[in-house]
Picture (cartoon, rainbow, N blue to C red):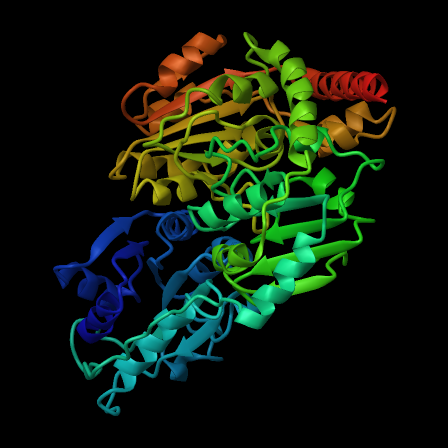
Length: 545
């Protein structure tokens, strides 16, 4: 299998994430013997796959996941589904039994061909090593790596059947692979002129920057400034870390049915904010711009779809536009200032909302931020607008699961330090991936918000159903995490004051930081803040009118 691993390395695959298994021995030995292959080993296939997911998020390049045959593949499915939905490149190298063992009830044997269905962008079922055309393997693998990137990023499955013995016998010929160049789609001059004219005639427009965008948005920001349109950036858009005066802070609190733009220009992937998605209804023109052919239109409001790289789209339009200040951004900024004043009452508190208010001014530009699903990502959506540039913000928002979050953080930590914020059930769901944090090149600090259950469901609880909701939806538990940290050799601290949080976040090394919060106070807190902001905005509107 040396030729297989060597071809992947030549195609730019650097990291190989492995879980132990006998049938995958040929792949493991080839990786171990390759001087340029970096490796990461974890005992649980699910955690290993999420590690590869985190690496792919951080680098834009696929890591290879190597597992044995049988149920090992099933453990990859959650990460594969997330990688597919969030367009993260990944290679799955799954060892398999030879075809003569299928349908014989042979141990650890199942039908692995196309097991991941539509969740992978491409599937390769390699033949057992034998006499093959010289370039078969090299060309097949270079095409497989290319499919992790184009026409959109995602996972690719390479199924590898082996016969015993695993330490010799037939092998693939090395051959020569295919070099691939990836271009970015842009607009023709005629289309650029057309869209510049359309947008230039709209006085009240809004720009939404969704997830999975490039790390820079220079041209998009310039477009918003020229048009005098506000920017609503998603938490994982890589624009929240920009101190742009075009960004409208806390915009989910400011959206009303009475005030909507004439056009909404949405760049890139989905957004966390459900209020923003619902607010889109009734806007006369909704334009989606993305460099991939996937349809992003869950409520069927999109009127125009443009297949182009967002920054190149903006760059193409700018020469055809003239600046015409309308005061529209200034109107939104005034509302944001009102929300900011109300939210400042969170200072000094370590409630679930107060955690994000405390952290927004203390994020390091050298440290990636990962936000868990359920309540943490929603609190980040409304509260987390860092005033100084910070490093990228990540989350598993493709399918928004609470599985594999720790493993994903460990994969991101292949490239930089990570600060993670997640709930107690998210931590419990991936507890054994804490073992990964002692082996990452960079430290991972995990802040776990412990309110003894899935309290996001409190926002949807029917009246008079407290006991049923506690048992079946909240899944209440009595656990704390000091002993878990001890089991996996991680420093641990339980904190209750904002200054303790700031001190711990700025410290060195990996750690597990537990913040106990009220199981029942979060809903009331959210409702009070939202109502106070709405009342303040109503008073402001009355004064203006």
